[in-house]
Image (cartoon, rainbow, N blue to C red):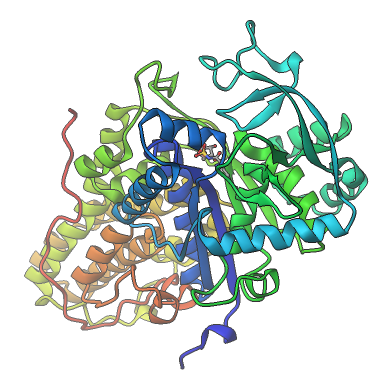
Length: 529
Ligand code: MSP
């Protein structure tokens, strides 16, 4: 049976819309990998998935960057947007919609939204005075600044004094509605620590914020007053909605929100939490558009324990990492090593050691040694064993039967590290099982049925491990599946019908007598540089 898209439940997820002031860095790669893993998991569950990412191209920050390198802002944005799209391909990210805020359809969406909020009476003209950080594209409170008026997030940049007429959004009007939202939907902001941060910020009392700029050409003009440009954050948040338009659809809010909306998850870094958990829901409330289900703010990456920064000179180039180590290696390290939601560190020695231990030694080796034995002792076919012949208390069977549920719960909670741990526990048990059961000696003793049961149990455990890790390491999982005789690709967008979670996440799926492929290492050992 095949399902048309409308028969299926939908799932939509976003990454932030990345600034094009510079080529992608490891922080943007981290969020996008995580979003892709969630999207892939939901595809396995048979959902019709829309994974949204894109580039944030308007505003003073981008205008100045372009000027500094002698390009027009559009020309500069075109170049950098391409770098993002290429990196996502290199990292095996399945992007369903790549939105650029300079897309003409986006302007129509922003203007319609602005108009709605305007008609609601939530926009007024006022005088904005304050310290502005161009790198954050945000006004800062004097008390939050470092000495000499430097921004705490950009200590090498001075904030700038602004005193200009702006349009303001009546955020203060939504104070109690927001508080009610956080109370009635305790999962709206995750993890808990971020939720507490937001609750404490909101409890201090919300202030209206300015949503237009004067003396800035690079942006979308305010409909009623083209001397003003719409504030880049107001513009960028709406890109999430524009991204839901189908390619030739008329750009209206009604069209954009018809199918994939509301979003299931906005995945972001902790530095842009306020925009997503306070400003954005209030904007949506004003425009009377439903709110997303949850906003998840992950932690920050450091390198060798230090903040990653150009000034320190310790930036990690994601393209270089993929070139040297492969997409799956990069994906696995960041998700396995760092508890999602917390800050985490990149250290190249640990990177190499973890990958060698988990993917080359434990997973790769288990498949390789078992396949070789099956070729030698069972003629290159999956042993003709009925799962019911394997005792229910067989170590691998009993672990394997619990694993799908456990790993699904971990993915649902975005606990990727736990998902990896649980799967690797089965893999390690598989290696121990081979050592203990010693199939070579069962062969010598002529115990063919026992031998076949053992080898079936191990092969099936490797299969299950590869399936459950496929959202994280799709290329390796594909290689494992191929060697086990399947012609399923985990990059197939129809994977949810080809190999649905409801059947493939169970133990005992490997068909008896299926012809097996030649054993080849699925992950080459890495050298410490
Ligand atoms: N353009 C805005 C987002 C608009 S969304 C409507 C923006 N862009 S950004 O390119 O500066 O940042 C994108 C993301 O990268 C943020 O989620 C931020 O948290 C993340 N990171 C930036 N540096 C990071 C680390 N060192 N570690 C992890 N994530 C980091 O903000």
